[in-house]
Length: 180
Ligand code: ATP
Ligand code: MG
Image 1 (cartoon, rainbow, N blue to C red):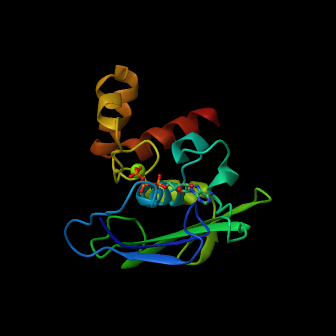
Image 2: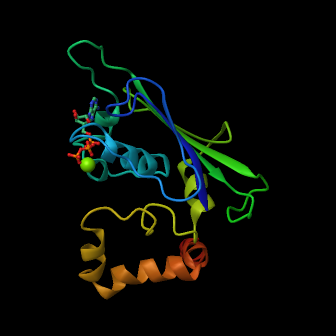
Image 3: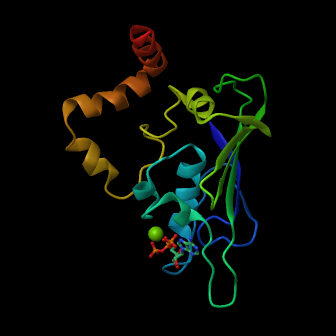
């Protein structure tokens, strides 16, 4: 799966609409401490549906909204759009390009979109099941994550293998069926 572009607006330090295009190969972000490199990674995790403010290195989720500087007023909404190439059909939607968008207002209201159609968080989750992308998956390997995986309990580590084996969707559906 290839990321094509990431657009951030009002998210953390990105007060201005900022677009990053990912070319083939490796993309590296360089810059001095505090310039916003990790915020870019946070934006990717966030748009994929991360619900833990801690994972965003924030006390509460509203803290991801640009909160102003000496010369700029805070904004009232954070928005991130991730565009993914889907020519190989890995994501189960018949579209060659899929754009996932998440918005959060200061009121706490949040919105998700797939190709500009409003959807639920659950729809985003389901789209990425068994792709290695997403909240409990392994596509974002930040500092300490490898250690965490190695030292985790076997039951926790099993999620990673289930995701890689492509059986998460069946497990989730099975659990849902049992509850009914
Ligand atoms: P390092 O090289 O130290 O890891 P970095 O480039 O990864 O630095 P980030 O952690 O991405 O830096 O960015 C931190 C900056 O983002 C800080 O200056 C912080 O003030 C700013 N920031 C975080 N949240 C917000 C927000 N809601 N509004 C405005 N600025 C924010
Ligand atoms: Mg950093």
